[in-house]
Image 1: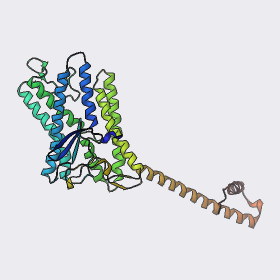
Image 2 (image 1 turned 180 degrees about the vertical axis):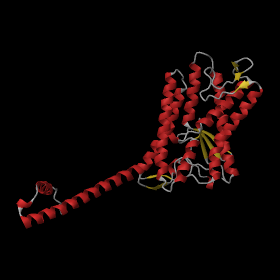
Image 3 (image 1 turned 180 degrees about the horizontal axis):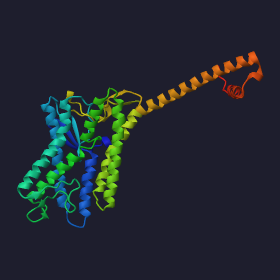
Image 4 (image 1 turned 30 degrees about the vertical axis):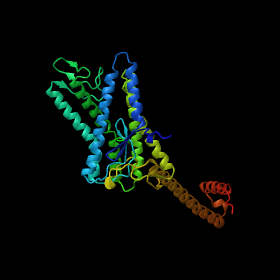
Length: 356
């Protein structure tokens, strides 16, 4: 398997008719998080394992929300396969549809995470604890809530610690899925907006790719700034740019091969059910000229038209001068007419001859 976008090596079996796999990005994320905790100076391996487990629960809530909403809005059968990465499902999906039901299905996952975060914040407030609203978390223990009675963070494995971390992870999933680039749900919704706003679906690819490139660059810049400021979470932001850029490159390769994905890659189409699309079964449409190539072609056409008009004007002027020369003689030509005659004559002599 050479393409990391479709590499889901760990099979968790079929759950309610859906094949569930762990994507390589989730496997690497978990392994790196646990190894980093293992070699850290303070003993925090068990705490890291605990919040990683909570992350998997938040992922399950995210995907179940997609599936349940699709079923309630007439989406039909459950997805054939789900490839879990740290922020949702990486598996390719059929082409998107243009209906309010589809928008609800896209929003269902992030809204479910947001609901969990708000519910958690309310419960913590009842017990005089402060929810972590900073997406970058606390410096000491990212998702641990602040106990207002003691002005200290909740200790690991206490009930409020579990609750705070669970809400914080749901909150982070909600915030990151607002990014308008694939494979985030915000990117799917953005592609849907582009597809609906123009009859020319090449606009989906052109502006979608440009926006994705911009998001990846911003994540890298912010990540570097965080690293320079001695915040290790900058590496996570930089790593988020990797799948975005890989998907962009995949789409560019597809366009270069003479086509592009139907209404955008990784979109949802629930008109035929909430089903996945195998990586080698992407719908390809005939190549359409991109906006940049159209601009370059039109500029070339205008340049050719101006050249032809200039040559036609020169020929008319040449005919007038030659007629005057024949009628009145060389002495009747003005200095400007003489210079024009010499210049155009030299130009015509040096013109490349057409070969049969």
